[in-house]
Length: 377
Ligand code: SF4
Ligand code: SF4
Image (cartoon, rainbow, N blue to C red):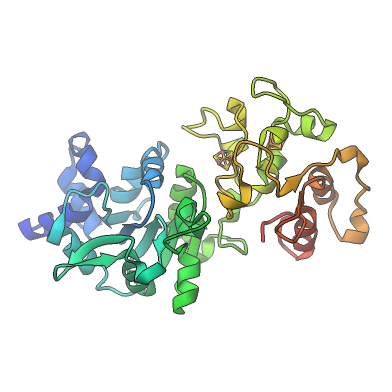
C-alpha cells in the first residue's frame, strides 16, 4: 500500500479521531506517523455513546487478541483495518474539533461504519441525552443516531443499552429509552443493524464482528432474527454449561459455594444465548458460572426486566425436574436427536408472564429450517 504524506492539517484531523485510541497508547507506537498515514484511507468509524456507563467501551478496549488498536489503526488483517474518527470517551479532541471530525466523516454517505453504545432516549424529543452542541444548542443522541445512522453502511449496536434499551429502559423507563433497531423502525430507517447484546458485551463479539465485516462484507455475518451474529449468540449458555449434568439430575445448589447447578440461585443460562461457557472472559480466565455466580442473563435481549430479579429465581420462570416431563418425539416434531435432547433438558422452564413458554418458543423456532432451537422471540 502506498504511503500518503500527511500534512499538519491532516495530522490534526486524524488526531481528532484516529488517536481516540492511540491517545491512550501513543507512546507504545514507534511508527505513529505510519499508522496515521495508513488510517487516512481505511474504513472510518463513528462511535456514538448514548445513555450508559461506557462499560462496553471498557470491555472492548480490553481485547487482547487481536488488540483493539490493531483492529482500529494497524493492519492486523492485511490491507484492512478501520479508523476510529470519533469516540467521546477516549478521543483526544474535544469541542468544535471533535464535532468537526464527526461531521467530516459523515460527509461520505454509505462510506462509514457506525457503532452505537448506550441507549437512545426518545421521550420529549430525546432531551435527556445530548452529545456535543451546534450553534450553542445541545444535540440529542436521538438526532445523532437518526442523522448518522441513516447514511451509515451499517450500524453495530454494542451492548444491552444500544440493542434494546438495557438498564436505562428498565421499568418505568422514564426517558423513553430504546435500542437502535426500535428507533430505526420508528423513523423508517433501513440501515442494516448488527446487535451485540451484553452488559457488557465480550470484546471478541465486537472484534470478531468487525473483522468479519472487513474481510467478507456485511453479508458474511450470519445473524439470527434479532440481528445477533450466530457465531457468538447461536447457542444457549445452558447448552454448554459444565454444570448441565447437575441440572439434568435435579441437583441444585442452595448456596453459591456448592458445585451444583445454579438455577435455583437465579441462573438465567437456560434463557440466554451467548458463548460465555466456551469463550470465557478476561482472555479465557473464567466466566460467571465458572466463578460460582449465576448467569444474570446480561446478554438476553430482555435484560434486565425479563430476567429480574437478577440473583434469585425469576417469577417468570419455574423449573420442573426433567425426569417428570413427557419425552420429546423427535420425529413428530421434525427435530434432530440433538435438538430434541436440548429441548428435553430445558423444557422444565416455563415463561408464564411473557405469554409463551420457553419450550414452545424453542419448538416453534426449531421447526423453521436452518435455525437453531431456542432462539428468544
Ligand atoms: S441453569 Fe445455569 S448453572 Fe445450571 S446448567 Fe444451566 S447454565 Fe449451568
Ligand atoms: S454468563 Fe450470563 S451474565 Fe455472565 S457474561 Fe455471559 S451472558 Fe452475561
